[in-house]
Structure formats: C-alpha cells, structure tokens
Amino acid sequence: MKIKSILLSQPKPVDVTKTPYEAIIKKYNVNIDFEKFIKLEDVSASELRQDKVKFNNFTAVILTSRNTIDHFFRIAKEMRYTVPEDMKYFCVSESTALYLQRYIQYRKRKIFYGKQTFADLIEVMKKHKEEKFFMPTSNLVTEDYDAMLNEADFEYEKAVIFRTVSADLSHVDINKYDMLVFFSPAGIDSLKENFPDFVQTENVAIGGFGQSTCKAITDAGFTLNFSAPTPSCPSMNMAIEEFIANEIKKAKKK
Image (cartoon, rainbow, N blue to C red; front, side):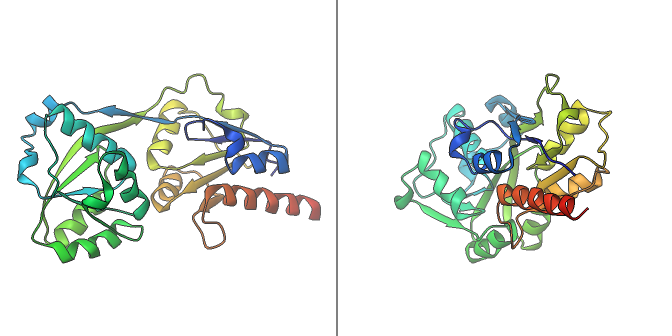
C-alpha cells in the first residue's frame, strides 16, 4: 500500500509546521489535509429550561471533555446562573481539568480528576457519594456513562447542552486519499452521511483514535488498518508514521 495523500478528520491547525505531522510530511513526502467532519451546535437556554434543569439543585458537575466545559459555562451564562465558588468539578482527566483555567481560578476551586477514562473518574467520585451531580453532555454521550453512574448509585442528572452533527463535506473528494484518519465515532457517521457510496479499497488505509472510534470503524464495515493509542504509539501521528514505515518495508521485500 502506497501512502501519498492523507485526510485527517480534524480542524486544520493554525500552523501545520508546528505540529508533529510536519515531520511526516517532510520525511515521507506525503500530503496531509485537515477537514472538520463534525460540528457542534448549541442547545439554547430555553431548550434546557423546557427540560426543567435547575442548576441550583447541584453541588458538583461532571466534565468529560473540553467541549463540555465550554458549553457548560456558555449555557450557565445564558441562564444567568453564577456558578458558586464551592461547586465541585469532576473531570475525566488532568488535561481536561486544567482546561477549566479558562473559566475559573483553578487553585481556589475544588477540582478532582481521573487518570484517563470515565471508569477511573467513577472511582474518584465514590469518595464523594454525598454530592448531587450534574452531567452536561452532547447528544452522542456514551451509554456506558449512565450504566456506570447507576451501578455506583450516584444521585445525578444529565442534560444535553450541545449537539454533535455532521459537517457539510460536499467540497471534499474522498476518493483521492490513500489514508483516512478518524478521532470519534461521529466522524464515521459523517463519512457515511456525506459519502454514502464510499468503498474502502485495498489501497486505502483507515486509522482510528480510541476504542469507541475503532469500534465504529469496524461496525460500519470498514477495515481498521491501524489505531492509537497503543504501547508503541501513544499518539496518532506516531501510529501514522509507524504504518507508513511498515508499508515501505513490505514494498521493499517484494
């Protein structure tokens, strides 16, 4: 398999030359394009009020991503709700927790986080069973979240505060790429919606980041050629480079 043109289902960085992908472009003489396969739509304050969500009822908030943080503070502002200083924040990872600094004084707040997964966060939350949790989500929240929260017998309420929908990709020639890389199940949904006739040939590699994305790829009937994170490739750029290098080795042996 010869890789010359790669499509990453992510927004284009401000400066590609300052990303790890620049090294791949130069080393292997490949072209890398970036496209947003999904977009986020706000859920309005009026919609949330119809769901009878009352922020004053909660003492803690569960935050699973940067997008969730952005939209939590957006909707709070729209609802004229001042987040109290004693609100507790439970974040899925340290990097997610650090993102809170955009909105609050980090060191003065009660912030907790798991190692990386939601299951890790559940273990942290078990030490705070007395809290009344609010979990803001997108419309594509993983059902496992509810199962884990219910199994641990937490008092919580969930509300959709933003929607993840497919972007318009009518300007993209999907068939010119030798490699497609996805970072969420929603990206796969967008691929199928925008390109219903797309067929993965033996000359097209598909990569996925994260277990749920990889599962979405295979569930859609595609072949998963490489993935991240893995022990040898914790990042997607490393996985892409490893795959290209292995394909070059295979070609030399023929």
